[in-house]
Image (tube, rainbow, N blue to C red; front, side, top):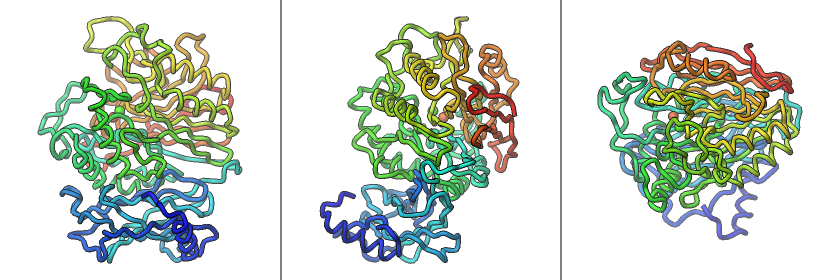
Length: 535
Ligand code: FE
Ligand code: CA
């Protein structure tokens, strides 16, 4: 990917721009490698893992695909040589007006994935894209450029979703998301789950044993090939492919893309940090290979840059956080525990100093009507009694923001001081919907911000609704919590200039195909008046 000859780069940028008839140079073509596969041929259709777009800007977005004619075979059924893949972007679905095109290289080092950063497009409109290799053509994808920063924008809509355990349900929610008239999807993480294939009766939810709806392949994933095959398995799902083809995604990872509840250099099993780093590097490589991410997110060893910001005109600034890679290890054995002294330690962090400063600076400088903090785990200080524990003490999830109380206080203080009344948090991870307000744990109960925690796409299987013991307990014990239900679905946000509305979408079943979608609850937040109310 590294271009060593800058003059050759400039020549190619010029010719690519001219070839596409663009006012600006298009995406730089790369020099032809000596081992390029001259005449590509494939044992089967090479675009079986679909296409995707992501990380939009006001003049473009990333388009992605991966050549994998035999997705579960070694190397995806590809020869281990680079392959040239043609791409086109048009202003219409039938490609009568192609406005950008070029050739990108699918490298065997990156599992023959293709990431093209399309630029030079017009703001705030849909575009369509497709890939071609040899005589084969991909499906057509639709993406969207963002409005110009600062331009007046009256409405932005988006979906927040994640936690898509393949064994525990059908991805019907992704099919429904593909049909939503939204500008983007925020994926909060748990795109894959790392666990082994489990036989019949081998997964348990709420004390009940279930048969997998469909099966993982193989053992818990550790090697690069394992991670690639797991991503390929998930990406072979038609509903997930439909969502990627329909909408640009802002991707973020949580824990299961690597290992359950990992934190910075630590996994959950006490593996030495320098050993876990190898696994993390491989998992991050496979993650990058399968996501529509910019080159700025290419992993460097066991690190990759995933926190980034997006500006939708003058309406919405979005801050996409990474609360896994820089956090301190979980306190108290990462269990549901009382808030002991360690969670208040100023030496423990959820975001790391650099990311926290970046977020705080961004929030302070933001002139948008609204600010979205899009992240992975619950911010609400939710008291939840651990049913397995013998104690009657108030207990909290140590993997979520309550386990990082010093960071949580700093975050809420910053919002309260610098952008009161215009910050909304969207999160996930907990496998049920939660909607509520954010108050300081040590304050006077003043509402500072609100949170919509989106339930899972499938993780947790069908769920039990909102009348189970846990749902009743958390509603009783936490006055700031306005709604929770244990069903699958997603959150749909509709951001206007003065009111932010959020629908908690649920499916009646995910263990059968084509579950029925409904809106469990709708909330609204008025700009300048922190706190959500029923709408
Ligand atoms: Fe999850
Ligand atoms: Ca998670």
